[in-house]
Length: 288
Image (cartoon, rainbow, N blue to C red; front, side, top):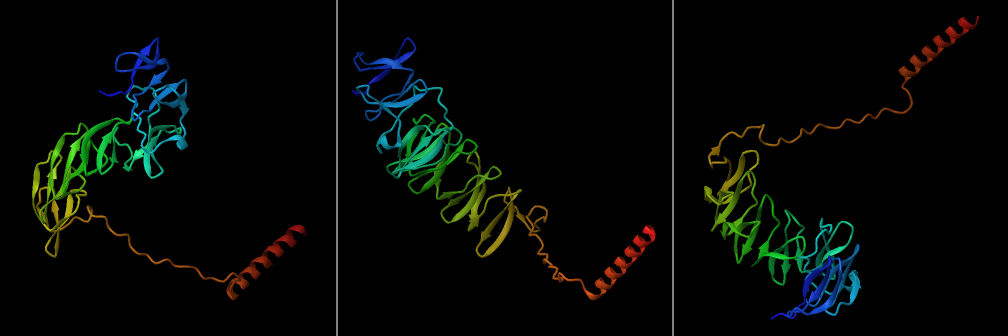
């Protein structure tokens, strides 16, 4: 049985009991998190603190954070959880937008949060955590990337696949490589050949290419041997690529610099002299 203390509430305040139900830390906190590695995060007013299992309170300071400290904020609510990643002593953690440490640095590597989850590396494996720091997808992947449109690319051993936000395998981890989805299709590698699957994992274009790029505006570039071709989303070869589809290179119009001297030419000088002479004559006539 774990010796960790358990949060309890009394008269709108939080404290901690042991496994027998005995009060160890009186209910004096406005919010309280679970203990992890002998440390819990609590809130009194607007101040977030750490406490040990004797209730001794210490302000949250980066200099006081142990590399092995991991805080579980399951019971803490109403915190500003718009988090960003930071690094401290070769470990990664997360702060909110006003600089408070919400998830102390404890991860070897970490991605930014996307769609409410972040992939982090603990030891040699990757898991996914929620904004409060709780591990929610604990499969222990060899690689786990950020979520986009409800899917994330993962790797187990030497194979790749995709999971959803619940950690279910939407696309089985069976491909030698799999690209990111573009226009609802992703290039996948089976052995030495490439094909395409859709968002549900169904093979749309059988693996047959030696190289394959992502789809853009309905077409993708593929290679068979040394020959490059374009295909549509059904795998049909496109002989004439519409110039409106492809991004055309801007014409290289030469820049013409005007190297005219700052002093006027002889012809310009004569014209200016004539102009000034006429102006003086008009001035003399009007003054007379």
